[in-house]
Amino acid sequence: MSRNRPPARARGSLRGSPQTRLRIGFLLIAMVLSVFGGRLVQLQGFDPQSYAAMAAAEGMEEVDLPAERGEILDRNGQPLAGSVEGAMVVADPALTAERAPELAKFLANRLPVDYFTLLPRLREEGSRYEYVARQVPAAQAAAVVDAAKEAGFDGLTTYRDPMRDYPAGDVAANLVGFLGTPHPVEGDQPLAGLELAFDDLLAGTDGEASYQTGAGSKIPLGDSTKVPAVDGRDLTTTIDRDLQWYTQRVLRQTVEDSRAESGFAVVMDTRTGELLTVADHPTFDANHPGDADREDRVSRAMSDVYEPGSVEKVLTFGALLDAGKVTPRTRLTIPPRLDRQDRSIGDWFDHGTIRLTLAGVLAKSSNIGTVLASDLFEPGELRSYLEDFGLGRRTGIGVLGETPGILPSESLWTSQTEDRISFGQSLSVNAVQMAAAVNTIANEGVRVDPHVVRGSAETADGTVVGTDTATERRVISTEAARQTARMMERVVDPEAGVAPGAAVPGYRVAGKTGTAQRVGEECQCYDGTFTVSFAGFAPADDPRFTVYVVVQNPGNGGGGGSVTGPAFSKIMGYALRRYAVAPTGTRPSQLPVEW
Image (cartoon, rainbow, N blue to C red):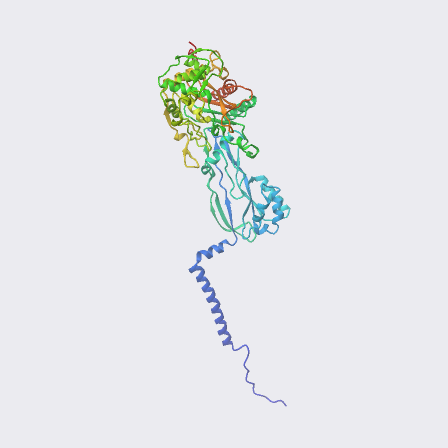
């Protein structure tokens, strides 16, 4: 029979009493909450900005927004340099690092990038955005990225990146300049010409966009910030693209036909000083500058210095007329040779003793007659006039590499020096400088600064240039300039002058030939080569344009009249027709050349 026992007393449990467990739980919760609270105070109270930045950086991507480079335009708004659609190829190293060597080889075979330069970019630790190539044709960039995906490579994408384009190829290329191969990071790299001189104006400022992305994703998920790009500003030049094209073609044909080394030509608006053409040959296609020799990528019209030869005589005679020393009818007796100090001076043509007027001396281009007339100058007087004509200093039109030429200083100016300078030796000029000097005669004795920029713009060295900054300076009187122009007309007269080939049918033309010995770089002496040239303006009695053509070392033995005179005629004729300049209908000069 069973017995009923009283219940046994409970033993102590390992779990403890419910009250104890609750106390311990609350304590643990309090400790955890304290940790979280302290962390929250730290984040929000002591260093909120740095932690917010760290949080934002997680999954953030920064993308450059390239500025579009300003255009270089001709006077009519036609582009000489512009921008077309291009793209940059960008890599995400987080996705490209694993197969970086294979991908680098793949890209180096399809883009203008170097394998060894690219490889570390594809492996850049901690980066999500590395340039592969800049300014690639948009279609090419897209095709490369698509091909990479098909080949199993991840982590490549493209963004807009405008490319430089020169739609007219070689037209004004020596003046406009070019950009180098795009730097993988910096993009455009201007290397020459107006592109370099006005880079601050043209380049603009790149922008930047930042946005959140998912892990390994390029799809924006969160808020984005954007600093927009500021596009570059346009540069409008005084160049006439069509006239420039035509002048370059005439110049090329002239250089090739005469088997010359090189040549350059300038067309100038007589009244404003605006340069409508600055042409060089040989030249290059600005879209492919690497295909040309270095010396063919600069503007010889601005950088070459040479002795102007007999073109300088118009400045000498203009100064003599202004000083009241002579008239166009002044009579001179010209011997076969003229012995002066250390040398004997001769003419380019053989003759006995001849009698020429001052107009005849210019028409026949007599060195002896010029020296005899120049004896009437006071000491230093000719040098002062030549300075006023702008010789011996840069024109300052804003083209890098322009040379100042050489006009001997007062201390080196001797009577022997003056003899030679009076007919164009022992001094040096550049083509734009000399064109502006001759244009002074055309502009009734007032020198106007030459310009290649319309309006105003600041160069890399801080100089403001352009037509808005143009200055004028009277060098000789109006009457002296008109008398010189009438004398210059006799140069192209088939009965009196040496350059009938420079005439422009239907128009009165004033001009002057030049043939000068060249100084060799090695011997620093006259080396048997020549510079031939022709400078002039039309209509002679109401000038609209001044044209100056120079050819270096023609191989056919021709001079200024036979080589550059016909080129002048073609260029001037085209300019007059293009701008609808009507003939004046007046009779050309009939000044006597002999007495």
